[in-house]
Image (tube, rainbow, N blue to C red; front, side, top):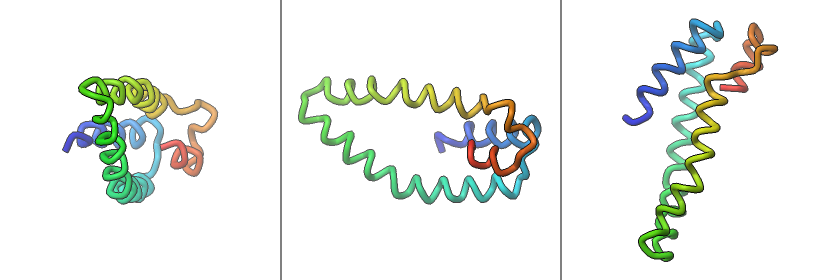
Length: 94
């Protein structure tokens, strides 16, 4: 549920601005959901292991992951201009 606003904004941006096919976006989102189903338990295990470092362990984990997440959001909404019009390159970027 937390990813719903991102998916809605990304699908609008890549569909209207970048002109990526909605069928391609749908396939990408399905693959992303499958990867999430595999990845989320792994990230949960990593997060749980940070509790050994005391109450600040999870804070350290969040502090390490925040720049990666921010960079990912920036890259998601700022695809390279040279790739506009290429369905394959934009699908790879998304």
